[in-house]
Image (cartoon, rainbow, N blue to C red; front, side, top):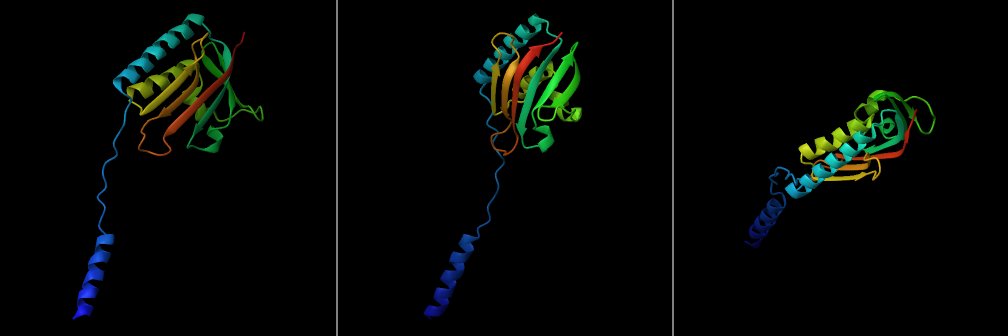
Length: 164
């Protein structure tokens, strides 16, 4: 009589190990309204500072870190004339790169738009550092959804120089 009871106990225990797991929808942890408001205020102040400089001819080194194709993460020098991108070259080789890979980041106004979009989309985390003198962003870190891996975006803008 003990054998059937023992087998039943083992079967019941093994069934409890395989209990189906019900998936739960991801919880979006968005910026608090106070942080979003602060980010928007900083964006407004620094964008205004940038436009007051009336800089239309400039170059800068741009680096993107993300879960994307390797060619999109290599450091590049972006040259802008009269507000229009004229060249994007690899820092390493000095050779032109595929401009489509950097289309959203190829002018300072477009970088401001990236920040504005992250605020509008209520990114879970948004950290921006601005140049105190000229107002352009020097570092943009965005995590759109803290529950999703590999959606983070890290942008670095260095060596901005006015050109003539």
